[in-house]
Image (cartoon, rainbow, N blue to C red; front, side, top):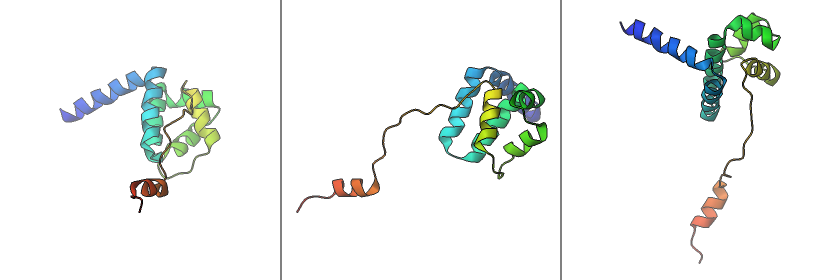
Length: 114
């Protein structure tokens, strides 16, 4: 029964990931995690949801390369990752963030003047 429930959850996830807005939010969360293997897992989920062969064809990449690209621990070129994202109807976007305080700045500001 637990295996059946897990399968239903995965099926529902794949159904949701067919929506480009949902897929982009899913991948954005993975990017924010800061771990490449999390990003590759999320992208693999989106690609499976949309169909590996169809995504590979739209990206102009063969299926074997898609699988190798998404395998944790392998190095992937930005060009390949970008092509896969575009083939899934999502894209990367850079947004401004709040600047981080440098450790030396925080230390200096935290000290009292003598």
